[in-house]
Image (tube, rainbow, N blue to C red):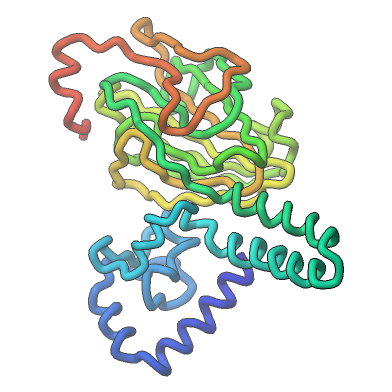
Length: 298
């Protein structure tokens, strides 16, 4: 993160010196206000670490770097992919030049880095009331709770190993109501207390599939995963299965959904799930609810 922010400082200086026309053009296209942003951004690349804050933004049509979203790797991990993966690839070439077996260990690490930041396509179940997994990994918790924001609810915990895709997706279509960050520890994500004590970020949303009842997805750091990325902010509307963030290098994701007698589960503890495509549960909707569930509640 420090390297990226330092490079951003250098890049903005280069652009203002060599491409003042581009800088003025992007200044005219940006929306919003600076808010708490600690610098004056030139384009969308400068907002990577601040997209979930109330600050400047550019419409997708004015984002010259939107093509990066079409890559088979998550856009929020391209810097690590280039810096860390590139370093081990160069180390592979250097050591292999002396003696080829020496290049195998760094080549394996390079492959793991590439594997970690992959962004495979997913087929999203679009039926109303179907709740999809917010993360890849293993189901480690299904527990009824009383949640201060939701009331009677069910908490589903998913453990992500370093081999899982780490992109988080919305479990239901909905509108973001609140984004809350809490600093904390970096305990092993398999330990139950990690859910309470580790650094985490909550995305609270409302869905037309459960009108008037919010649901929450919590991103939790792990022992080695110390970087939560979230690029949505209050007011954003997400489709079911749409990516909204990631956790880097192994972690835990929790989904808290309203509990009522219409909720039916389709997974059990120990099951492996895939973000956006695996069905966790389903709300049985009556005809009237199904007919109106295409409109987001105010």
